Amino acid sequence: MPANTELITKESAAFAPRAGRKQAPALRIAFLVWQTAVYLALTVFLLEAFFYFARVGDSEHTRPDRKVGYKLFANKRITQRKEGFGCFKLNSFGMQNDEVPVAKAPGVFRVAVFGDSYVEALHVPRKSNFLSVIEERLRKETGRPVEVLNFGVSNYSVAQDYLRYQTLGRQFKPDLVVQTFRVEEIGKLLPVNTTNLLFIRPVYFADYDGHIKYDDTCVRNYYLSREGKRMLATDWLREYSRIWGVIGLMRENWASFSETVKPAMSLLKGGAAAPAATFTLPTDETRKNYANCYWYMMDAQLAAFARDCRADGAQFMLLRTPMIRPGMHELTDNPTETALLDKTARKLNVPLLNLDQDYRSFVGVTTDDGTNFSAGGHFTAPMHRWVGERVAAFLLQEQVLEARTAGK
Image (cartoon, rainbow, N blue to C red; front, top):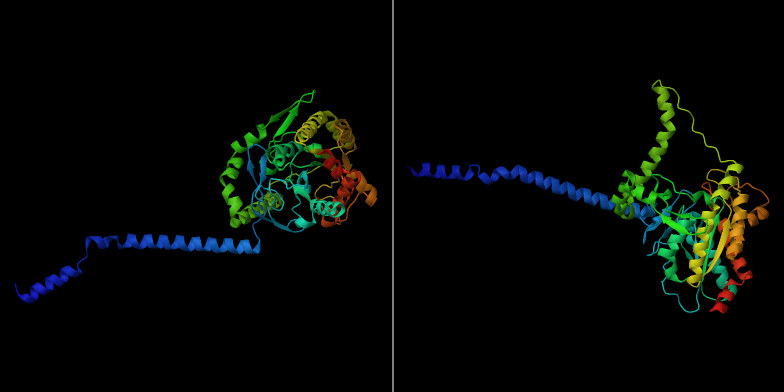
């Protein structure tokens, strides 16, 4: 074979497709997938960082809990803009409180306050809520170290407050436990089947001898439901992802928008107009009968709570606060509930401060123009100041701090 022919043959063989080169398209696809994943991860990271520094998507503050129904996230920053503005970090115990050691320092008088969103106070800066006002006033007036701990959680019932004391509060060894009891608190006494996490409540049923029994049927049913499983599956995202928080807010707004436009869409499609949704408050007679019928359960829960506190060396106190319903400007009243609470306080021999009555006397009217209550019905900063000053004055007048010191 001629030399030039042999050379051409070798060169042709060098440039001929090899078996391995058939994988080049697959490698390119793999590289594109990897590149897309990297860009997507970078985009998510940058968006999360942007939302974090912009304080967006921070409103998710409760997580599932099979014992209490739900509780606050621990160590999570919360930003709330719906009613006023509040931005703070929950402490490592899941409390709307500055970090506090479990062990109480010598000489410290420790107050533990339990209740719902009125106590939790996500709508004002932490230093402006009534618990901070109490702490500041007691420290100033007594010259003693005082700690007021916030165990409030949105929409909690008395049963959940009692459970929160058992599972968390008692380890802090408070000297005084304050159970906040807002007007219409008895409305949270019975179990409710719902798909809303903030309405999932275990209950304490009671017999007429005052024995209580824990029942978590509604809690178990919720976590077996589709919505409950979704909340459990997305718990990590709700805690750490601001993007997920924004998505959750968008879903909430879309659901509200859909309900608003649904009647109009029905008309456009030629259908009949949907009947307008109506909401009527229970009559005074209905509320009176309900309170009288079920108070024995509330009475038994408060008695058990007070007994546990005394066994732990703490004094127990009841604080009744005024309330307006969200979207309304009229103060809510329930004389039957007030009378029954007063009767229970006397039977248990515990202090009761009725700020609902004091507030009505103070303002002289039963309406609010937004000065003291937000649109959603929560205390504004001036109202927190008013409540805190009166609670502190009551404790000083009753010499609670001095009595506890003498008792020790």
